[in-house]
Image (cartoon, rainbow, N blue to C red; front, top):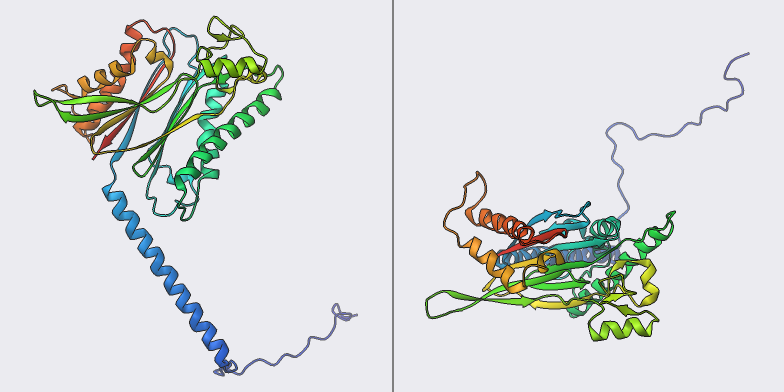
Length: 355
C-alpha cells in the first residue's frame, strides 16, 4: 500500500508564465479622485506636523533652562521618611504634549510620617497618574484642564495608596505631605498638601547700591489644624483638634495616606497655584518642614543667594560654574538646617532658572 494512497490528488493551479505581468483593472474617475484627496490630506497633515515641530523648537529655544538639585539629611531620625522626584523633562512619561507646549518639567518633595511607605508610594506614582490624565491636543482651556488634572491626580494617588494600605495585615498607617511643581513651558503650577513648601526667588529692580533686591514668592499654602478653615472642616467631620493636632496626634490636616484620619476630615485635595515665570526669576525652592522649622522662607532664599554669589567654587570637568554653585547652595542649605538644630529629616530641592 502506498503511503500517500488516501491523500487527495494535488490540484493543478495555473501560474503565470515567466516574464508575464498582471495588469490591474483601470480605476474609475471616482477612485482616482478619492486617491488624490487621500494624498492631499496626507501632505497637509505632514505639513501641519512640520509646522508644529518648528513652533515647538522656537518656543523651546526661548524658554528658561531648568535644572534640579537635591540634598537630603536624615537628621536624628532612625529612618529617612522623605522622598523626592526630579524630572526636568517629563515628556518621556507623556503620550504626547498638548498643542503648542514644548516642555513639561516636574519636581516634587514628599515628607512621610508614621513610616516611609506613603511618601515612597507618592514619589513613585503621582507623576505617572499625572501623565495618564495630562491634556492632549489643542486646548483653549489648558490652564483649567491642568488644575483639574492635578486635583484628580492627588485624589487618585491617595485612593490607590489607601487601598493598598488597608489590604495589608496589619494595615499600614503611613501618611505623607506632598508638594509638587509642574512647569509647562514658562508657567508654574504648584500643588501642595500638608506643611512642605515651595517658594520662588525673584530679583527686582536694582536698588541704590546697584544690587538687585530679592523677593520671595510663596507657591504653596500650609495645611495644619490650627488654621481656622482646616479646623472647622475637621470638626464638622466629627474630628477634634487638640494641641494643634488632629485628635491630638496628626500635625497636618491634608495628606496622602493617613487612612485612620480620613473619617476625621483629613483630605487629599491640594492647594493649586499658578505663576508665570519672568526674566527676573532665579530659582524655585521646594523643601519639607524640616527646613522651615529652622529657616523662614525669606532666610532660606537669602542663604541660597549668598552661596551663589560666593567668589570661589571648586571646578569639575563637564560641570559649569553656575551648576556647581547651585549644587553647593542646595547641599549647604540642608546641612545648615541640621547645624541649626533640626532633628527632623530634611530634604531640599533647588531648581535653577537660567535665561
